[in-house]
Length: 243
Ligand SMILES: [Zn+2]
Image (cartoon, rainbow, N blue to C red):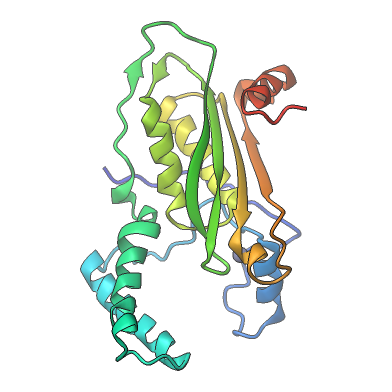
């Protein structure tokens, strides 16, 4: 099933509105945006022709270009250890770490009737995920905590995990990842009552730039009943974030 990501909402942070895409490669604003991890849109910015090339062709082309990057860096591609790297990276990009770009890879989710009439909040916490920062293409590693209050429909618990993994497997910014998970679950579960909290470490902060290895970033999204402070507090207590 192909599905289009809905919502035309745009996150506007510090007046940045996504018009920076055509600047030259040494434009200072690119560094500023990259290092500040500002996201411009809830939808992953994809080209209209994103899926015209099939996976095999993408792997072939990325492999070719990655070989070139390695060569420019001065690496000797005839070395046994390096020989297979371009293809390995290309396969990893297309089939694994960026496979969530393709809507065909979204997990199939069956909706069930909530037979037990359980209408308290359901919390799925500590969902470990690995993503990649879209500004530096290095990992974001973190935990996601998700809660919903059933509107009469439920999904298998593992599906929440799978939705998190699907959106994580894209070049991402943490704010967008948070909202994409929330919006998908709202639509899938047919409820407004959704909470998502993500606590993640960004390798682009730890291994370069300020090289801060202690900090982590927390983002959250609350809607429906979770806008109520008591409900939100209950959720935060479950995930161990309430002081
Ligand atoms: Zn980054």
